[in-house]
Each structure stands twice: as structure tokens, then as C-alpha cells.
Length: 376
Ligand SMILES: *Cc1c(COP(=O)(O)O)cnc(C)c1O
Image 1: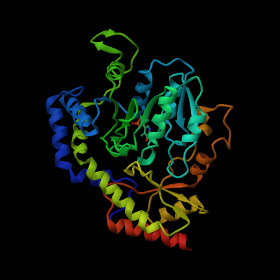
Image 2: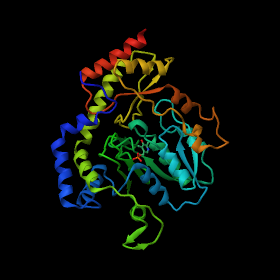
Image 3: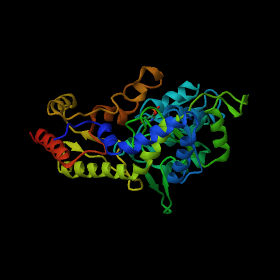
Image 4: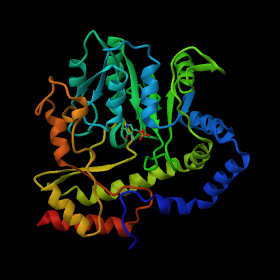
């Protein structure tokens, strides 16, 4: 059996090595390392794939979130609502810009922002909501868009874990994750579903005005060379990464299907066992399983992880500490017990190996090993 990895980037690369190597060498030959043809073509191809008017490539997913917030003309102290159970970048950029992160608990089944808690957290100072499509399925975007409309709020989707996920509204309209709110922000970090060989990110919007502003912000606040209308940053996707992404975008649907197949295998194997709860999916969203995350019921997670490691099966905890208990976001309003669902999830979630190259032999070994342990 092939060695089991959490993510197997090497095997994935070897399957498309020729295409990737050619793309990289062509870019080197062109010497257009910054804003070259590859970046423009990737942008156009991603716009077409997502059916969105504007894709603005940038240096990473964290920058994408920061640029999105910078484009909204917010004032210091304006409140931005984000889920409490997420990767730090979502909340970090809010605080970094002098805005106030307002944390909200998540749904215990889908792990995405809890709609009731969200509506209760809105005040006169609230300006935007940043839902996170955690692990690869969309947050409840129908409700979020309705709440945003009612309270006149911006919606910035953190879609770093949901490249290729689709969401269908009650009226039958289907949209790609990241193209539903006013702005979508993604990451092409090597382990994401659409990923490059380094850092990369992008911003999506259908709003011409926001797109123009964001294009200026990622380029030092410039629309015309050496004329700076506003303070921006330097955040670029480089041409070599764009060339790699052009190749991988062609495989994205196939890659997401392989992940779904692996998830189906896990789900079928585990569904009869009460000690583990398989991931729940919102029927309106597809799930592309950036992570396959179980909830453990009355299992000592540390001991379980040690056993898996001994058997050659890696596992990870995304995420061990909720945002309100991170020292970086200390706020005397928040304490242990403030967000019971996220606090509980942090202590019971466990992510299993999930990538595009898992084969049946590996999946059988992983599931049998786990079942043997929980049956005891
Ligand atoms: C990866 C990730 C980010 C940040 O992306 P980087 O490219 O690493 O800056 C933001 N939010 C979520 C939910 C992520 O998973």
C-alpha cells in the first residue's frame, strides 16, 4: 500500500508533470514574471469557470480578505461579523484594519455560521458579514443574503476552502461559492482544492466599482502608473503560479469528484457507528471536502490520534482553539463558555486524510483501522 498522507501533492503532480513543467518553462522563457500573459489568461479562465464578472488575482487568501474590506470605505470601529470557528485569517484582517471583529457561533452539524446567532449580533455599527464556507460546503447563503439585504450589509465570502462548490437557491438559481455575496475571497495555498506551488489568492466580484477599487488597492492604490489615489498594498499573483493554476483549473472538477468519492467511501463505512459522526451536508450546497472532518463522541481524541499515527494514518485537528479564546483577539466580553458550539467542536473534531489521490486500498485500510478501534 502507498504511504498515507493527509494531502498527497507529490502524487497529484506526477500525474500531470508534463503539463505543469511545460507551463513553468514557458513562463520562464517569456521572462514576464509579473502580470504576464499567464496571469491575464488565468484570470479570464477563472471568470468563465465561476461565471463571475471580475477576478482580481492577488498574493494570497489573507490579502484577498484584507483588500475586500479595504474597498468598502469603512470607518475604524465598524463591526464585521465572522464565525468563531474558522482559520485565523478571516478574523485577523478585520482586526488589522482597525475594524471590530464580532464573533458568532456556528451550526453544530454543518460547522458554518449559525444564522440565529448572526442576526442577534447585528447592531447599528455592523457593516459586513464574512461567512466562511468551512471544509468545502457553503454556509447558509440564502439566509445570509436575506439578512444582509434587510440590514443593508456587505457580504464577503471566505471561499478559501470551497473552490468549485456550488449553491442552489430556493428559486432554482445555482451559483459558485464566492460569487454569491458582494465579494468572494479565495486562496491558492498548495493544499487548497485549487492550488499552486506557493502562495496565491484571488478576489471575485460582479460589481464593476468594487472591482476597479480592488484592482487599484492590490497595486499600491494605482490606476494610472505613478498616480496614487489611495493607500494600497502590493499583492500580486506571480506568472509562474498563474501558469500552474491554469493547468490545475482544468482538473478542478475531476479533483473535487475524487474527493467526493473518498468522502462517500468514508461515510458508508462509518455511518453505522455511533461513536463517530460523519460530516453533515446542507442540501442546497455541494461539498468538495477540502477537509473530511468527523465528530468524535466519547472518544479520547489524543489517544485515538496516537493509535492512528501508530498505524500509519495521519489525522489533524482543524481547529483546536476557537477565535474568542485566542490571545490575539482578547476581548473582556468573551470568555470560556461564550460560544458553546465552537468550543465543543474544537474538542471533538478530527480530520482524516483527504486528497485527490486516495485509492480504495488506502481507504479500506483507514476505515477498517478506525472501525476496529471504536468497536472495542
Ligand atoms: C487558507 C485560508 C485562508 C488564508 O489563505 P492564505 O492563502 O493562506 O493567506 C483564509 N481563510 C480560510 C478559511 C482558509 O482556509
